[in-house]
Length: 163
Image (cartoon, rainbow, N blue to C red; front, side, top):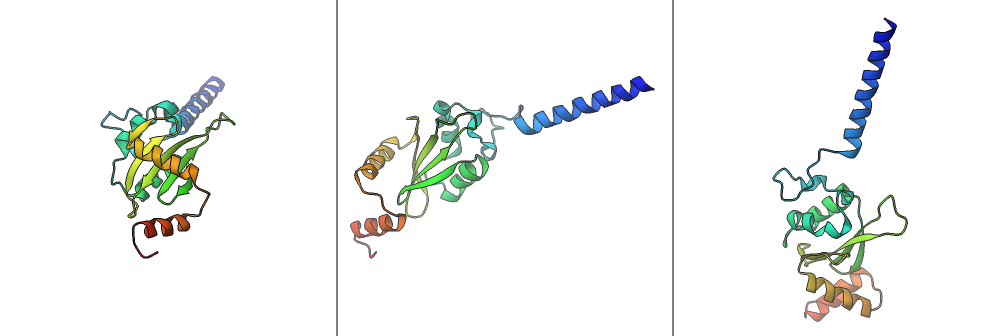
């Protein structure tokens, strides 16, 4: 009787630990973006090395995707935060828990309708339209810091629109 109680306790403990392992680390999650079972809504930065991010990003995002979808995946699901660099130019950043030095990011450009135009990783990984991202980044570094509303007003003036 005593042996069966101990055995039952050991079996239950092992089952609970296995359940926690599966729930926390998702060892059976499909991370290959070419696999038809790949789910973009389960994307985590930690599933890939930073120099590999462009591969799943190419499968998950395409020019014309709405900003809400990009932010849902990168911020709500993957845990990134955003920084507005210029109007319609955003950096999504992620900091791994195991490093207090490294900061990784994805640079994104949207059009005036908040549709995705260009994307690249800060590790120089081209997702799509990398030259546009690089030229916009260089332009932002030459200009003084401004708020998003100042940029929108200035760009409308440049296009001949009413600010």
